[in-house]
Image (cartoon, rainbow, N blue to C red):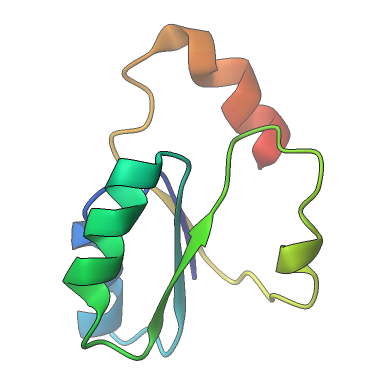
Length: 88
């Protein structure tokens, strides 16, 4: 499972609760990532990654198998639609 715009990690937690064995929770904001890492520190099946939409270098995702892509509350800014689609 890959979650785009994970924020504080609620959806990642729910994914694990519902049976996901591995979740990559991504966000771009350093402050948010810091909080996300604190929130998931005790859950070994959630990995936090920095990902900015339309990021050129995504080699860190090489080898990651994505069965499910989650994105919750990510479309509040209409200017981000195109970036989100390019990332997907």
